[in-house]
Length: 397
Length: 241
View 1 (cartoon, chains in turn blue, orange):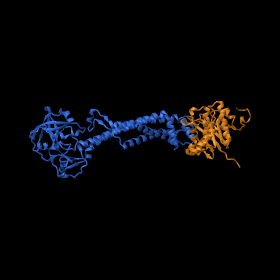
View 2 (view 1 turned 90 degrees about the vertical axis):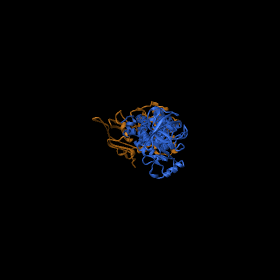
View 3 (view 1 turned 135 degrees about the vertical axis):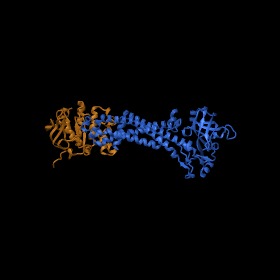
View 4 (view 1 turned 180 degrees about the vertical axis):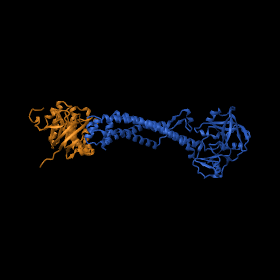
């Protein structure tokens, strides 16, 4: 208790020296929490966006379907198993048929995936309702195909809303067919995997075009839908399976963020270490006096270490004073991302909204306090070598 | 009945290695001090006064021989035991006052009692009494930087005696003071010695201090050259201010 009281007195008595250290350390607190919160927020945003636009409550996939092998698409379709068909009928699943196709905008050739989806589905956050507005009502087998594309494909192909282009595909019998298609809407999404290299068409129309009535490649379940174990051999891929890649990517970015945290922390620790070394040098006579008055060396070391720890505590309090409103403001308004972050490889919004969990704040506080205490302790080992008689004269060992 | 000595040194030596040679700061000192003495180690610089004082205060250890302080052999004390001995039984007064700069006068004096674990009310009573002895009760809230040299040394005296130690070791306590302040603090220590029975042992070559001593031990080259009981100059009227 005495040591704590003395440490508080010494810290407050040191005036500007203490407050400079406290301020530098509090900056580290805020910057570390901000950078880690940014990664955490990015992860949450990306997961939420992927679940909303692609993953839903998971996919039941045709046994032959391999999303990473387009060559499997020719065989990766079949009638929906009865339990999935029932779910689709009740709006709890959205069947999707996927085939390979080629588009010819302005005469140029682009290989795409053609995805058929029910325009009335509400499971995925894709504006499929536009597909219900057939641009040219006519006999279905000859009318233009309504197509929904994302902004990335639109940018790549130069297509805009209302543009027409030729779409070529192979039907179930292997015959090549082609028809004109019209872009009914260009949608913007942060999730590249529902945009790049693919076009969305009405499911029934695609089934009709390919001669695959009632068939699908996979079915997207609505979130929280109870999963039937492998109906008809279809394979279930849970949201966690889909998000595994994202999480490993975020984890890799977290390492980058940790390096930044280490740099911020190191700068603050350098200041603490430097101050502590200087403090021990300047306070040699005081150390000698404390020993003469009855302090053991261990107590003197404890006193200096506690002073360092309390610097950390004061920094945490100061960081809370100005950091809380600052970080809350950034969390509310977001952090604008440059346009080219789209190439990072996963769903990043135009603005990132940092997320600060209690664990993040508590963990960072613990880490900084621990580092401060350890760094404060290291120079105090010199005190153990200090002879009281030398210290009283202001000499160092 | 024989009085138990407070300090006994036997063949006390302190040798410092100085490169390839050795410096013998104390070369076999044999001394005995009893409770209530007002004694001084005098002699030129380098005669071993401060070294002897440091050993008696358990701030240093002898190279050879023994120093028994309040029944404890200094040479065999652990750091912890030495700290306890200093904390409970020994008060120090330094040439440069060595007040803790961030504490007030009150807190500087209270410090020794904090280490003893005295309860707050008891601490307050003792601190105020000690400040009364040195006539600084009205400066209790001041910081050391606001005090004159004489006042600082009086605070140091209050800090040294507040815990009623058996022994106060004063190393050149007047070296940084003018004549008037020197006499003031010496009179203060003398009265504390008489009123509280505290043993004072000085290391000094200041003639002003010598005027107050009742025992003067002269050290030369680490040896006791003379050990004499003297009548303080102050005992004869007009001898000192």
